[in-house]
Image (tube, rainbow, N blue to C red; front, top):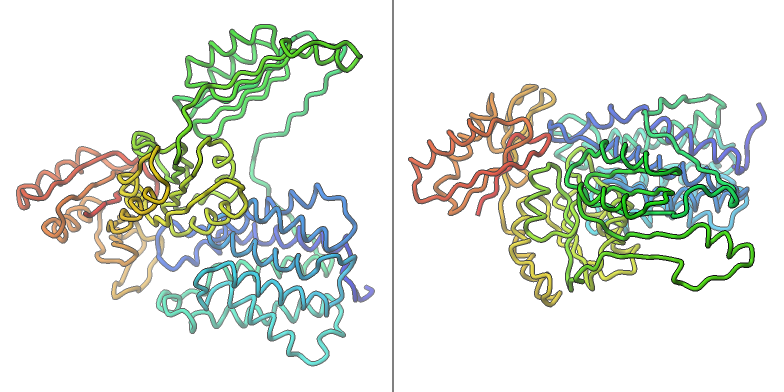
Length: 542
C-alpha cells in the first residue's frame, strides 16, 4: 500500500466517518467510566450524538477541500453538541477546522499545527479548565507527538499510530491529575472518547472498515408534486402545543384530510403540514388536542398561476399567527419528567426542554426553542451542570438577548423561578433569579457498580444519597434513604420539598414524611410528583 503523505478530501471523509463509528461502538464502555457510580454516565452517548450531527453535515457538503470539509464537520458538531463533553469535543474540531482553514489537503506538519489550534480553542471554551480530562489528552498528545524528532516526515498512518499511542499514554495518566478519577479507579471518560475517535481515524487510514450499527429511526419522506396536478388547494401548516405527548389519533384524522402530510411530534410540540381543501376543519380538529401556534395557509392554485404569469393581490394568501402577548423576559428551562414540566409551566416558563441526566439536550435543541420565543430577553435555566456549556453555546450563536443563569439542579431552577417577573426589568430578574442558586439539593439514586468513593464502600444497586454533589449516605432501599435524609436534615432547614420519581410509590413517600413530621413539627415538608427518571427522589432544602 502506497504511503499517504498528504490527507486528501476522500481520506478525510473516511477518517471522520470511521472516528464517529468507533466512538459510537464504544459509547457504552465510555459511559461506564463515569466517576459517580450512578446511571447518568452519558459522556459516550453525548459525544456520539455530537459527531452524528457532524457527519450528517459533512455528507451534505460536496467540497473537495479538506479545510471546507473540516469546517462543515465543526459546524455540525457544534449544532449537535450535547453535554460538556460534546461541547468541548465540538471546540476541538472547531479549532482543527480553523487550523486547516483554506487547505486543499494536509501534510502531517500542517495537521499538527491544526491540532495545536484545537488545543487553544478547546481550552478557551472552558471557563475553568480542569486537567485530567479530555482537554489534557488533546493537549499532551499534541505536544508529545510534536516533540518526536522527524515526525513531520512520517506518513499519515504512522503519524496517527504515534498520536494514538501518545493519547493512550495521556489517558492513562488522567487519574494522577484528577484525584476523583484515581479514587474511583477509572480514567477520564471524555479522554477515552477522544482515543476512540483517533482509533477510528487510524482504522480508516489502514483501510480497515468499521461497521456502524444504526439505531432505528424515522425514515425521511419526500413529497413530489407537479404544479399542474393540484387536487388540494390549500397548503396548511401549523404548530400545536399539545396536551399529551402522544397524538396518534390526531395524526390519523389529519391523514384523512388531504395529502402531502408531514406530522412530527417533539414532546408536546406537534408540527403539521398538509395539502387540503378544508384548512378550517384541520385547525378546528387540532384545537381539540391543544393550542395552535404560527398557523400558515397558502393557496397553491394562486401560487401556480403566479408562476404562469397570472397575478393576484395578497388577499389570496392567508397567514394567521396566534396573538401572543410579548413578554419582556421569557424563560427556557431544562427538566426531565412530566411532573417537573408541569411545575415549570405553572411557574411561567415559556418552554421546557426535556432533558437532564442521561439525556442532555444539544446546542441545536436549545436554539430551536430560543427561535420560537417572542420576548425582548430570554433566560435559560440549564438545571444541570452538564448542560451549562451547551446553553452558553446557544447564547453565543443566537442574535437574541440571552442570559444563562447557571442552575445546576432542578430545585435551583424552581427556586430561581420564584424571582421571575415576565414584565420586569431584565437586570432585576437576573439578580432575583440568581438567589435561587443558594438552594441545597439531595438526589437519591442507585449505584451501577461496586466502588470505593468519598469514604464509602459501595456495592452495585446500593441506594446513594448525594447532597450538592457529595455522597452523604448509602442505604439498601429508596425508602430507607428518604427516611435517613429527613432524619439528617429535617431539623436543619425550614422547608423541604420532596419530588418523587417516575417509578416511586407516592403513598410510601407520604407515610415516611408524616412519620418525620411528628419528630419535627416545625419543619414544613412538601411532596410533589416530579416523574423524573434515574432518581427515586430529588429533594430541595431551604
